Image (cartoon, rainbow, N blue to C red; front, side, top):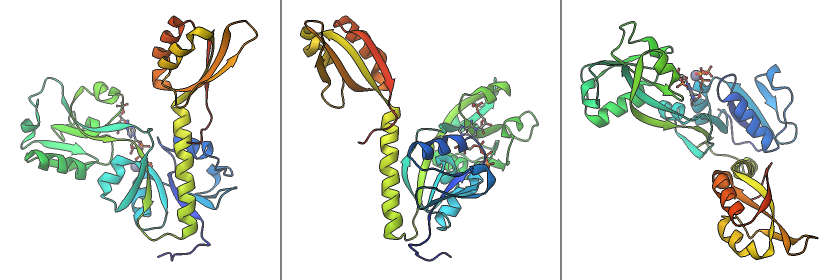
Length: 292
Ligand code: PRT
Ligand code: ZN
C-alpha cells in the first residue's frame, strides 16, 4: 500500500484503449496537461504538472482508485456503480453518455417489468441488473456474459438482455427492442477516498477548476453583431448573457457593434430574435477556455 507521500505524482487512471480514451485525453489536453507520446508506455509522465497517467482497462479503474493506486480516474458511471466502488464522484463529464437498458426480442411476450418473472436475462452488468429487479420485486435468472450480450436471445441462452445502449443501432440490428432504461451513465471523474497530501488536494482543485472552465467554454459561443443604437435595449433583453454585452460605437452613424457570450443551446433561437430586432452580420465563434 502506498503511503501518504507528497513527493509522488498525482496518478490518474485513464482507459487504455476504448470509447473513453480519446475524449479523456482531449479533455486533459484541453485543460493544459501536456504528455509525451502516450502510446509508448502504460505510465506516462505529464510534462508540465506533477501528474502521471496510468492507462488500464476501464473495468479496473474503479478498483485502482478505491485502493489508492490511482488518485483520480476517468470512467463510466456504469462501471463505478457496477463495481460498487468506494470512491468519490467529483463530477460528470458529459461524454460517453449511454444507458443500461432491458431489451427483449421484438413481438415477444415480455412487455413490462412484471413479465420478466422467471425469465433468463443475459448481461455484463449483473449487479445493476439484479438491483433493478429487486427494486421491482421481480425474480429473474441473471446470466453473466462478458460480451456480445445482444446475441444471447437468438442463441436461446436468454429471454432478454440488459446492456448498454447509446444510439440503439445494435439492438435494432439484433431484432431487439428497448423496454426499460434502468441506469443513465456518462463518464465521471472519480477520486480515491484514501488520504491525500495537501499538494495533491491542491492539484485536484486546480484540475477541477480547469475542467469547469473548459466545459463552460465548450457549451458557450462568443457572438458579435452590428445593430442600430436604438435596438440595444431590445437586444439586451434577448441575450441571456453571462455578463452585460460589450457595446462599441461604429464609424457608421447610429450603429454599434455588440459582443457577448451565450450558451450554445440558445444560439439558433437567439439568432432569429436578434435578426428581428435589427442585428446584422451576426458571427459566432467557439471559445477555447473560460475562467469561471
Ligand atoms: O478494453 P476495455 O475493458 O477498457 O473496454 P470495454 O470494451 O469494456 O469498453 P468500451 O470502450 O466499449 O466502453 C467504455 C465505456 O464507454 C463504457 O463503460 C460506457 O461507460 C461507455 N459507453 C458509451 C459505451 C457505449 N456508449 C456503448 N454504446 N459502452 C459500450 N457501448 C456498446 C454496448 O455495450 C453495445 O454493444 O455499444 C453497443 C450499443 O451501442 P449502440 O450505439 O448501437 O446503441
Ligand atoms: Zn471494459
